Length: 557
Image (cartoon, rainbow, N blue to C red; front, top):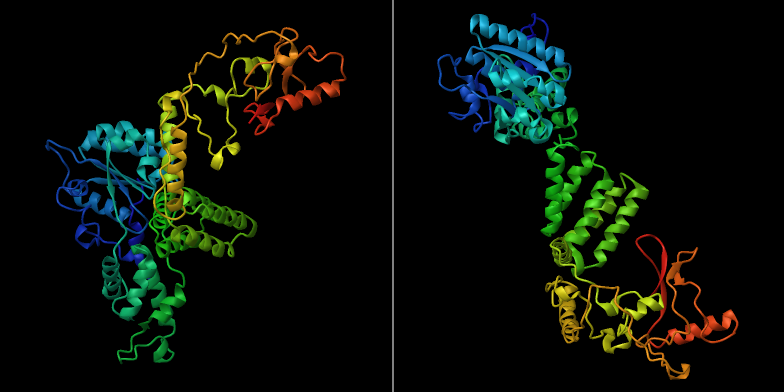
């Protein structure tokens, strides 16, 4: 038989158990808080009813999900005792599949031989592996046991779906300040607690409540430590340990509470819901331009030991997503802050993070760039990926030029205002606009300029295009060399010999192999110089670009 959950309460006289253990509620009426979980008709209330022999419906198995110190273990024990069912307890920290099967076997035999139902309580059930949780399924399914699991981790991620589908999740919230105050004052007066032998100032009660962070066990632990401190100091002066009002009882003051607990409890789990909830509130505060709230959540993360590099990454993301082009310099600030944090570390990194947070929170806001790329990606995902307009295509070889690649391209810097009236979008997307600046920050002056640029681009004539790049090269009139005009690649050269196929040299560049020399027997260096002079005109240049495969390719830009 497993040891009774509260066997620690039944100890010989002279052995003092912790105040939080002595003050465990023994009935539902003593439970503080969790009114929703204990409402009439709730799964816990139904489970607390007497055993369900002859009932048309059976109580559900329950998963109690909540932070530490809100009564998960206490509720499981009270429910089992009140219902008259046998109670079996396992801890996922120390138990394995063998222990689970032994308990389930006893429960099945008890049900068959005596008709007595069993409540199986597993604390920290999220620590069970998948195979250990799987071992519970047949008995929970057939109700050989009524299962109550307690977890501080979100069951959606820590409990297997098959066990979730057979249970009802009951969320227990942190205790409110009023609930914690009731717990503290009850413990001061209750015979199981301090028996009224210690007085506590109202300000001290408020401080205990504030430092507990919604954790009832923590509140009672702080109270016990403070009471122990003033009891030892009772022989001193009334200012520090004895009630100066004349009762003669030790007095707990705010100074005493600060002495025994100088740092408040910060509820934060780097791998749990608190991590994501606080991080979400942090990001939303920067987005909402509330620097004070953003600093508050930053402080909570830092005090809880969050990795400052994680925080710096979230600030960088917020600068692009929330501020964007309304103040594009903020991204530079946050990137510099992230680099400084990595170089410096804590505790000085807190100052850098604070500066970056304030820069994002107080900057003008725009999510236009965020919406723009998502809209463009949506078009690509939907299949709107027409061929690249021919005048924008690469043309490193004469063969590719003969296909019409790059013909008619206008170098933008040669146009008025560096905006050339030519088509850039694929034919299927001509006129599509993704970026729409708002009227805040830099985008306020960017908007009118963009409207003007778009009006020029819309005036560009449409060009006939074909997705077939293996077209027949255009016919070029054959005549004396002097009759062929070179102009920005708009007319082809008279070939002196058939053009061979392009091949890639050892350095990865693309060139024509075995090309005949149309200029006669001149030195190679002269031919190269002449070729460069004829190929490069005003407003054009040859540039080497690296493709997706990492190779260098000559490209006219």
